[in-house]
Image (cartoon, rainbow, N blue to C red; front, side, top):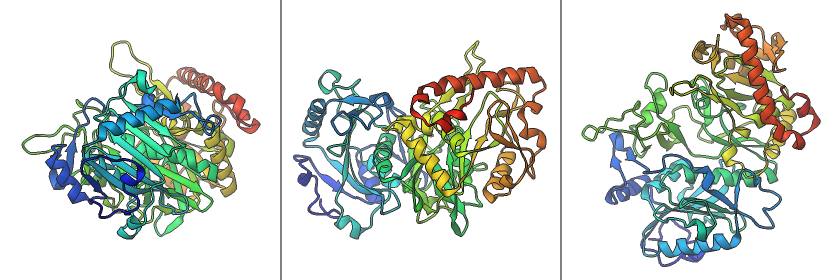
Length: 531
C-alpha cells in the first residue's frame, strides 16, 4: 500500500525490505479498524481506544542509549546518557530488521514542531497499529500535498516483539531505546509503552535545536486571547499543576508539554496532549475529562468495566501513570497555529511538600537559570510505617531524562533569552503552607490562580517586594485576592522554630544538589546559589 506517501520515500527506498504489508499514513478510522482486527485493544465510549501496555507502563530511561561517535563524543552528556558502540548498534539494527521480515508495519510521516523553520520531519514505523494512532495524535500532521513530497530526516522504528540481548547489543536489558544521531535513526524494542515514541522525538529536538540557537523546553505554554504576543511558559515536573494551570479558560493553550523558543517566539513541538487521567474529574478539568470519550483518543492502562466500558479514574491497580492521548483540537481554547510570541512571563512550578517556599517569588535571569538547573519539586512520603519525610526530587531542566546535552547548555540558552526579551520570571509553589505535608495544608488553588493572573497581567511586578532570607529571591508582600499572610510562609506556621529548621533543611538540599554544576556555570549564577 503506497498511497499517501512519497513514492520515492518508501521503506524499501530506505533499505527496509522483506516486510509484510506496510500501511502508510492511515487516517484515524482506518488505524482503529486495523487495531481492532489485530485485537490490540477495545473500542470504548465515543470511539476511544482502550489499551494496556503489559509489563511496562512508563518510560525506561535506564534503557536509553546514544551511539558514541566522533561527532557525539564532545556534545552528549554521557553522565545522563548511556553510550552504545557503533558496532553494537549495527548488530542491533541488523537483528531487528531480520526479525521484522514478513510482519506488517504502520508508517506515519509527521512534523515535530509547529514552526516550519525549525520543525523536524520524522518517520515513525510501528509494529502496533495503535502506536501509529498515538504518534499521529502526538506530532503534527502534514496534509496530503505535504505527504506527497515528504522526505524523512529522522526515522524511528518501534518493534515491541523484538527482545534485545545485552551481551550481543551492548545494552542493559531486553528493552532498548537506541539513538544514532549520525545515522538519524532511533530503534525502540521490547516495550509497548507508547510514550517512548513521543519522548524520542523530544530528545532529538533537545539535541538539534540548541545548535540553531533555539531553546527546547519541557513546558506548557499559553497566550492572552487574541494576543499571541502576550505568551507565557510553564515549567514543572509531574504533580506541580503544569497542565492544569496552563489550560486556564481565560487563556489560549499553545501546548501542554514540549515547546521551542526561537528569536521569533515560542512554538509547540506537538499536535496533541498526553494527559494523566488518575483522579481526573469532570468538575476540576471538564475539557480533559471530555476527551476520554471522544473518537480516536487513546486510553492507556486504565481499568474499565468490561460490560459498560466505563472508565475507573481512581483505580491505579494497573499503574498510577494512566494516560489519555488526543489531538490538541479536542481542547476548545487551543491555538490552531500552536505559535506564540516571545514569552513575557516564565513560570517555574514546584510542589514543595516541606511547606517553606512562598506561593510565588520573582527571579532574576541568573536565579531563573539556577532554579532551572535545580528542577526542584518533592514527592509526598508514602504510607509505609515510619516514612514521614517528603522526598525531594531534583530533575535538571525540568526534564533530565530527555536531555542529551549537558544541563548548562539549556540553562545558558534560557538565561540569555530571558535577558534578551526582558521576560519576568517566577517561581510558583503549588505545594504546602502552614506546615510540611502531614501538618500543613495544600496551597489554595484560588490563591495560585490569583497570583498567576497578577503576574501575567504585569500588576504583580509593579508592587512591593521583600527579599527572602533563606532563598534570596524577591517575594511580593501583597496581591489582590490573596491574604498577605499566605505570601510569608514563616507567618503561616504556628511553630516558627520548626519552620526555620525545615527551611534550613531544604536550603542544604539545594546546596548539595547544585555542587555538580558549580564548575560549569558563570559567576552570576554562582552568586545567587542557595546555601
